[in-house]
Length: 213
Image (cartoon, rainbow, N blue to C red; front, side, top):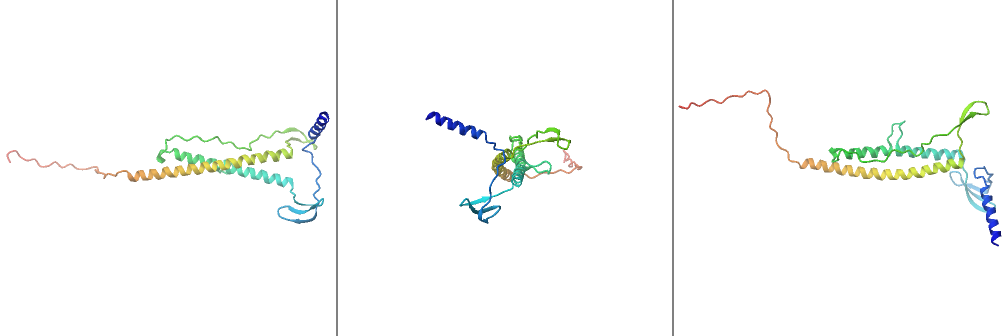
């Protein structure tokens, strides 16, 4: 009995390993009594069962995912091409103000983590001749791998966006508090009248009094 179970398990394991997850499968999307819900979603009957079906074009789905990731990254780290500083730049600028002595700082910039863009990835090209005998460089990636990679990027960037927003709020609150304290400190300092001598001036010697007088 144990031997039979082992053989069945081994068969299922090797059968699963032999399945190519990157191979395009044929999908039956036909439904009966279907009706539109919204955004590509439909309700209908398939194999006698009531289902909700969403059908998307993978090229459009991947494009939206990548655009979302790049926009989030620009929001977090800025974009040099368009001169935006992003949340990273806002936090750095706030901490620079905190370090200024006029705001009660020490003049030393508080540490900030290095700028690390998530999507920076060097493309690896296979160089050679294509079907038209033209010299080209080709980069290929499995569709599922690309989608999984950008979903991870999105998850990381969303987390960093929340972290930077919290750090910015804390920094701005601390800066506002220090500015308020410095302003009140200046008001509380005593102010003395100023004595001004204008130059040039003429010194007039007082009249001498005679000893006999």
